[in-house]
Length: 428
Image (cartoon, rainbow, N blue to C red):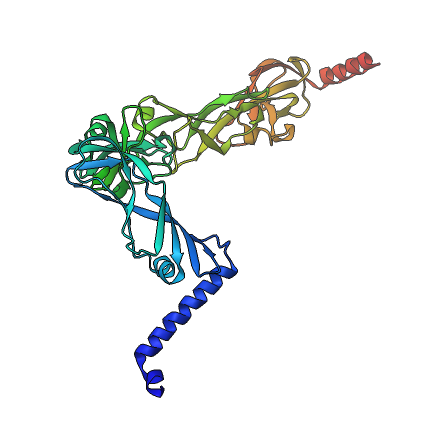
């Protein structure tokens, strides 16, 4: 007896028997197991197992025929003694098949068979019979085409220019009726977000009939490699400066220009062909009151991009016009004992008009100007004299007056006294 326990074969047989016992015990305890089999035991040691998803094999000359109508799997119910049923459940060492050998093309109702050869086990297959169609196997070569999706969602300014498929053809094997129904063989290429060329992207082949229904066929190869050439076209176009509104009163626009004459823009070729010029956003002249440089965004049409120049500098040259009224006309060099009166203008005042750079003009005041006449060595009598204007010596500033000459009357001291008296009387 001790030798039995030391024998490795005895240990193996005992282990197998114990394993079978445990398996039977677990299945009796939980006969609602949601797995691939259901078990039932009788008091006499009978066992019933329901196996699902048992694959179905097809026996036929596959090089010559194509079969449809055969389910991928079936349910098999096993009934018999635990000693026979349990190994079948554990090992799955049997097959369910449909024997189509000797049958020709057409539709046939056939019975599903199995390879279980045990007298004490009953086998029930569901379904028991099936309807199959046998057709001649055919193979043909088809050209693979590319279907580009989301081409309008490529990266800004990018476009597809060319593509290649390797290999460009595929061999399709199926029944003759399916081969004859093939409408298109294609691969789908998603271009969303693409901003560069695609090199040898491996993609699956899809086969459709003439109505657009996808077909289940054998492909050789099943995948192809697609390469796509992607370009980012650009061209240079003139830049114009756009304005709106009018300058404030007293201002005039000498010039307005951007710091660049052309802009490099990017888009698809067809879009670029439609564009001959790009402009800035409108500059509101009503807000301009001095010369200077401002940054202005470029106004780009939809689908057009200028990544290297989104803003430009615009130089505005504004001229201002300003009138300084009632500037007194001073005198210089009048000899002692003489006096003078203004005849024209009688007020002895004039208006000075300035124009030029608004930045400078706006900072001027009447104290920045002096108007005078030269009376040196003039004798009594009437004189027509030029007016001299002293103004800030700023480049680009123009100064004009309404009159360039004045008429004066120079008199002696008596005449001067009389004139003063007459003036006092007039004031009284």
